[in-house]
Each structure stands twice: as structure tokens, then as C-alpha cells.
Length: 419
Ligand code: CA
Image (cartoon, rainbow, N blue to C red; front, side, top):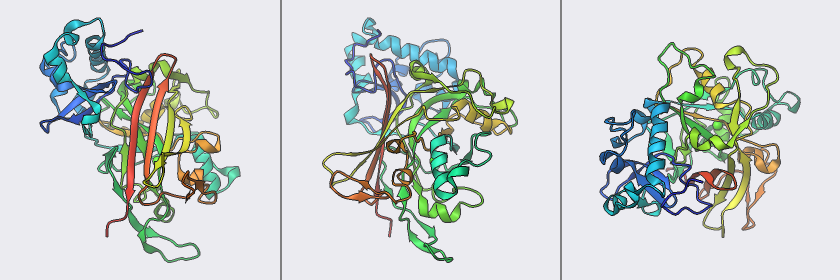
């Protein structure tokens, strides 16, 4: 098995097989693109400046001397794979280039605990899908009818909406409780004030690479060539605002105030040992969504709630990315079938990922069944929805007998609303 001269714990999210991409602030206050191994950030700016990305696609491109990944994402899969090969080789315990160069090593590896991570992408557009059947079934059962929980379109197309890119924030950003219009029970007049039914949504997102010109499409069987990598997503949702505003055009202010993502973008190549075939779809989909060898990834997902009263974070849910009805490739093919253009650095989120057991639901709405079954926390208190001071933490990783491919975490604390 491939190993690095940098020691990596077996439980680490960042073995040499992962090599995710992000950005961090250096000691001098500059923003550098980076990868990760074990407990270290790998400064890609330093490696690029030293001329070590010297393959066919990255030589003289200065791709890692930018402050965002957008240019690198736009170079496409051959460049992404070349960067991965270069990093794998430089970190290999048999390769002396970096291993035996003390000066370069001291500049390239920075302890992760000492750095602040920075949003690594300038996100142009954001789409949020709704692709977990159990989640759609749960919501449809709660608000409509368990016998007709899925809308007639749900198994024919990956339902989604265009979200808000400007308020996507990196893990660790604290957020004020939003205010808005809601409709009290038994009233026909709205009121204005703090959202009282604040929720998280456990999702996984992907970032696009090259994309397509306006008017062109991305075919379902080529779509993965346009997917740069994946992150954890918390699609914060104000359920009471959502309930009043959502008909007939879907979510608007309930979800536009914040979406949190994990800092590390994990590539599909790193996740490839964890591919799972997806079951045949019934009913059969239209040809433009009919993907050969439809697959997803076996990624364990966990959600925790922490606050200053708890001795340790309370686990709210355990789910898995494999609980998806639609693949990322189908989502991207659907997004572009009209000729909608996709650009490097656009973000696409899966929709809330709920498994088929009550402890695997990906939102408070489902875990407490609209607040009717409150969650008991380990300090004896109860939660129906998120309270001020609660920190919501999501983690994710794929694993086999030898290593984990991890995403790190996405967390965010809810502060009182702004006065
Ligand atoms: Ca969502």
C-alpha cells in the first residue's frame, strides 16, 4: 500500500490516498491553495513556485498561485489527475525530492491546527436538489399524505431549485438567527419576527469543473468529467418562514440567509474505491437521464449538536450518501438539458440525505417529526428545532480496512438574531 514519509493515523481523514483541495491563510496573511496529509496542510503555492507541478497540463500554468481553485477547476480532469499524481509522488516515502529537502519541507507543511481555512472557490451559482427518496417521502407524508407522499414528477426528474451563492460560508462561521414573515397557527395574518423553527439539512455537494457553453448540454455519461469534487453541506432552513412563503415557487428566504460547507473538496478519484452501483430506476427515466453504470459513493455521514451545557457533542443522526435516488451525473445532465451553462466553481447540493431508519434522518424536521417527538439531549434538555447557542457539526468519511477518505467537518453555531 502507498504510504507517505509524513505519518498518518489510521483514523485520519487525510491519508496520501485522499489529497483534497482547499485554501488557507499563511503566517504572512496571504491566501494559498492547499492540500492535506495527516495533521498538515500542504502549501500548493510553495510547490508550484518551486516548479514541481511540471507535467504536461500544469507546467507554466501557475494554477496553484491563484487564491481560488476556479482556474484549476476549469482545466479539467486531465489536469486534476496530473496534480494528484504529482502530489502522490512527492509525498511517497520512497521519493527524496521533498522528503530530504529540509528547507522546502519546512515551507510546504503547516500544522493544520495552526491555520485558518479560507473559502477555496469563488462560487458563481448554486443549485440545491431534493434527491433522497426517504427525505422526500418523509416531508410529503408530514405535509400532504403518506399515500401520495412523492409528487408525480419526483421519479421522472431530479427536483431542484436555484439557491443563493452569495451566502455560502465556510465551516466555523457563526450565524445569526434569521427574521422573517411567518403565519401563526390558526391565523390568516402573517407576523414578522425571529424564525422559531430553525433547522439544518444534512447534504453533500459537488463543485463543477469546465462546464458548458450557453445553449450546449452536458450528457449524462460525460457528466462526471465536469465534477471536480465533493464537500459536506449544511443547508440551513427556517421551516416557519418556508411554510408561509414556499407556494407556488419553492424555497426563497427560508434558505437564502446561509449555507455552510466543509473546507476540503474531496475528488472523485480519491472516492473511487468506495463506489456503489445504484439500483435500476422504476419507472424507467427519459433517455437524457438514462446513465450507463449509475453509481454513488459509500460515505458515512454524522450530525452532532453541541453547546456550552453539554459535556460532549450529542449525536443526532447517522446517515450515508448512498441513500440517493438520483446520481450526481443525472443531476448535472438535468441542470443543463435546457442549455443552461455551468461554470467552474458552481456548486450543486444533493438535498437532505435521509436513510430509512428514524436515527438516519437528515433534518430536525424529520428527526422530531415536525416537533411532535422532541430529541432528548444528554444534559436532560429537549430539542424540537435549533436553539441559540447550538453548534451543528456534520462529519463524513468513506473507509476500508486500510484507510479513511474524509471530508473533515462542517460546523456552524446559531447566535441570537441581530437587534
Ligand atoms: Ca436542501
